Image (cartoon, rainbow, N blue to C red; front, side, top):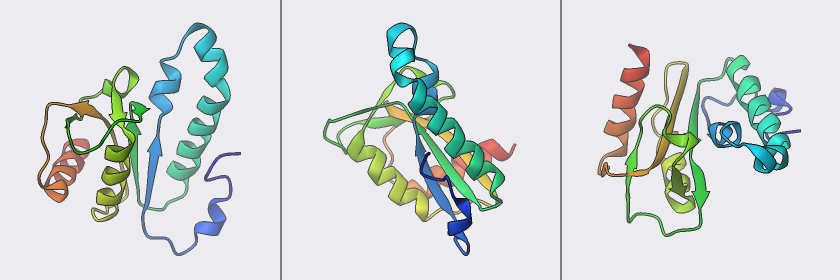
Length: 135
């Protein structure tokens, strides 16, 4: 049913961070698209339930998650990058923890994959990304 199938249980929650691979599933084609169809539907449902909840949220749309060591590569936050790029699972987990500390006014969604941008100050980076989405 998805992680957020009963949003009612989140009463009192002030901020939700959701790691999503929706764009990875949407970019699939052929046999891979058939195999990932259910995962795509669950990701779409989780995102739409969260968006309708009224709870401030951060959706981290990651590229294909890889079992590679984290902390060794930079990042890319370019629009469309998650459909074709990849992200270390360790980096994804670290990024979600960092995102808990930067609460948007209402909603914030961004894409991320491993890339060339080194991030030393996550609060500054996420605040900058929030600023870009509010323009």
